[in-house]
Image (cartoon, rainbow, N blue to C red):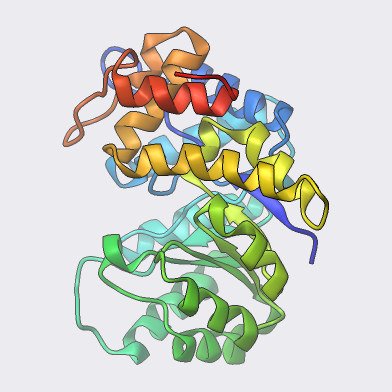
Length: 294
């Protein structure tokens, strides 16, 4: 499996907090030009659960309308409401996207695994035909994607269950899934785990900080197994560590604003509060991404 970097692109907002599709496209194109293999918009980093279904559809249409190859896009489509998940997934598949990154229905906690299997099954059957990438982020969703659930879904849908993004931060758990399901493309959410992910047979990473450091992360992927791997890993890990000490999504957006010289990129929707593009932590992250002293 060839390792890849997919970027969960931030969602820029206009002054009235509507989605700024012009800046969305500009940022997405810049990420691809910087070496990202693809995009995973409308997930956690994209503030997807602060967006309406219509906004998510319009955002994807803007990316496609700008000429971005749909085979390089895995949009987030999982919602709490089944009809919303079906609609977003069908739209992604009909547009030719590489797949749909699907959260479990996340409002009700403590639900049986069989109920989650039914929810995913209804969504897949209702949306048509395409690839599904399961989204495991239990610290946010409160609903884990277990090995048993994956096994059930593969039994029902075979190769349509194409992969998984593991944002749990539990490397032992990620490694166990990679070993248990060698046919799945399993992405880690941290670029610092790329060497271990790839060595175990994983697919690479889908990382929030790739919005700020796509060149560095691509450099690490290209350096795997060479004498340059250690230095590349240290660079991406340094950037990652800075963001881990900050409010993640506002700080990622503020760093993009600083890099692009455009404060509009720092806008967030409530309940987030914007971070200062000139703040110390953001400045250190931008400097680390550029490989220069803060």
